[in-house]
Amino acid sequence: MKTPQEYIDSLRKLELVVYMFGKRVENVVDDPIIRPSMNAVALTYALAMKPEYEEIMTATSHITGKKINRFTHIHRSVDDLVRKSKMGRLLGSLTGCCFQRCVGMDALNALSMTTFDIDAKHGTEYNRRFLAYLEYVQENDLVCDGAMTDPKGDRALAPHRQKDPDLFLRVVEERKDGIVVRGAKAHQTGAVNSHEVIVMPTIAMKAEDRDYAVAFALPSDAKGISYIMGRQSCDTRKLEAGAIDRGNFAFGGHEALIVFDDVFVPWERVFMFKEHDFSGQLVEQFASYHRQSYACKVGVGDVLIGAAQTAAEYNGADSASHVRDKIIEMNHLNETLYCGCIACAAEGHREPSGTYYVDSLLANVHKQNVTRFPYEIARLAQDIAGGLMVTCPSEDDLKSPETGKWVKKYLQGRSSVSTENRIRILRLIENLTLGSAAVGYLTESMHGAGSPQAQRVMIARLANMKEKQKVAKKLAGIAGDGA
Image 1 (cartoon, rainbow, N blue to C red):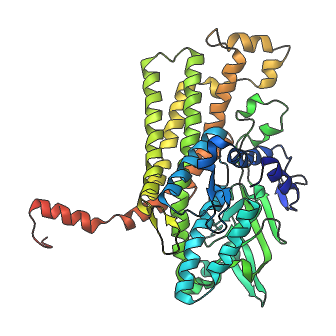
Image 2 (image 1 turned 60 degrees about the vertical axis):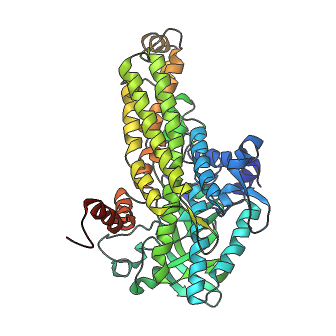
Image 3 (image 1 turned 120 degrees about the horizontal axis):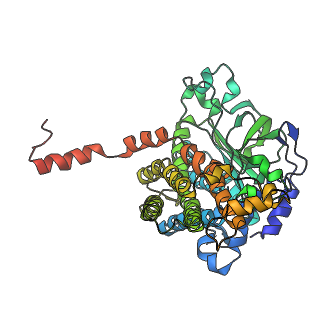
C-alpha cells in the first residue's frame, strides 16, 4: 500500500492536460486551488497506515491474499459492505469534504459483477480482463476516477439521435488492437487526483445506441484526455495568503469535465463493447453502490453539527432551549441518514460473481433522504450561526493595524472566546453551506449518484407493491384477487 507521500509523488509523474480559468495548469499537485482536494485523497492513504483504523480502511485481496486499501477492494461479505459505510462516515468527519475515491471503488465493484454476467451470456472474456486490471490497481494502490455521466445534450433524445453524436461518449473506430473513443464525461469529482479513469455508459441503451455501450479503463494521462476544471463558490479564496477566510483550509474537493478526443483504448482495457443489453445493469449496479457511498455526507454532517454547537457556545446562545432543540434535530436527521446506508449494507447479498451487492431499494431510499436532510441540517446551522456568517469582514481586516482593533472589539461574542476563533468557526459553517465545500455537501447530495427523480424511479420499480397489496387484502378478508 502507498504512503501519503508516495501517493503525492506518483501524481507528480503524471502528464495530465489540465485547464483552469482558460489556462493550462502546469503544476497540478501544488496548485493552491487543487491542492486541498488532493490532501483529502492523501488522507485515505494516511489512515490506512494507522493500526486504529486498520479494520475499516484495509481489507484482504481475494485475488492475491495481500493486505490492500479498502478503496481497491471487491466486497466479499456483508461485513465488507458495512465497513465501507463506516469508512465513508469516518473520512467525511475528518475532512469535512469529498475524499474522491468512492466513485472508483463503486465502479470496480459494479464491473466485477457486470463483466461476469456478460461473459456468462455472450461467451466473452471481459471478467478475465477486469480481474487482471483489478490486480494491477490493488498492487499499485491506485486512485480510480469513475466516469459515468455524459453531457447528454437534449435529454429528450436518445444518444444516436443527438444532433451532435459526441454528446454521449462513443466508439468511433474499431481496430485490431483496440478501439478509439470520443466524447466527454461531466462532473468528475477528484479526476485530476486520480491515476486511472474508468469509463461506463450513463444510461440503459437500446440496439440503436450500441456504439455508446462501452466500458473501459485508461491511465488518467493517456493521450487525448484533457481536463477542464469546474468553478466553485469562493474558490479563489484559496489563492489568498491567509487561511481563515477559506473556512476549511486543509481539505476540499473539485470537479472537472473530462474530454476524450479520439482516445485509443487497447482491448485488454475494454470491459464492455456494444453489449447494450447490459448497459442498464451496469448503470443500476454502480448507482446502487454509489448511493450507499453517501455515508460520507453523514461524516460531513458531523462536522457541521459540531461547528453549529461551537458557534452557539461562542455566541453565548447554547443554553437557549430553541438552539438545543435545533441541535437535536440536526443529529436526528444525520443519524437517520446513517441508518439508511448501514441498512442497505446489512441487507446486502452475494451475486453469482462472488461480489456482495447492497440492497438496491434501501440504497435508493438512503440517497433520496440525502437529497433532503443535508439541506435542512445546513439551514439549521445557518440559523444558529447568525447573520455574521455572511457579513463578517475579511481576515485582512481582522489583522489590519487600522481596522483590526474594531473588528476584535465589535465582533466579540462570549468574552472567554477570542474574536478570531469566533470568525474561524463561522467561516467553516459558511464554507460547508455556501462556499466551495457546499458543492460536496449540498449540491452533490442533490445530484451526485443520480438526481432525486432517478432514486424515485428505482423505488417505484423495486418496491414490491403486489406483495403489499396481497397481505393487506388478506388481513381485510378479501379473498383471492378480488377487487
